[in-house]
Structure formats: structure tokens, C-alpha cells
Length: 28
Image 1 (tube, rainbow, N blue to C red):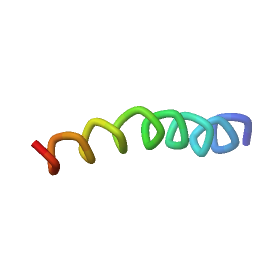
Image 2 (image 1 turned 180 degrees about the vertical axis):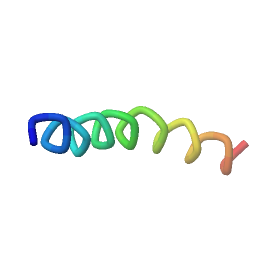
Image 3 (image 1 turned 30 degrees about the vertical axis):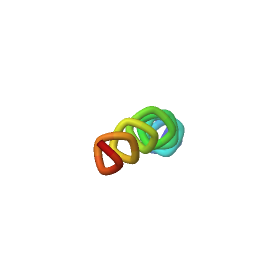
């Protein structure tokens, strides 16, 4: 399933974007 293969990539991008935001919010 192509859709299933694209999900991990989207999740990876979200994690890369959200991780620093959450990290900075925790520090703040």
C-alpha cells in the first residue's frame, strides 16, 4: 500500500518539526 508507505515519512517529518518545538516549549 503506497499510502501506508507514505505515513512513516509524514510521521518522521512531523516528529522532526514538532520535537524541537515541544523541546523548546519544555525549556520555556
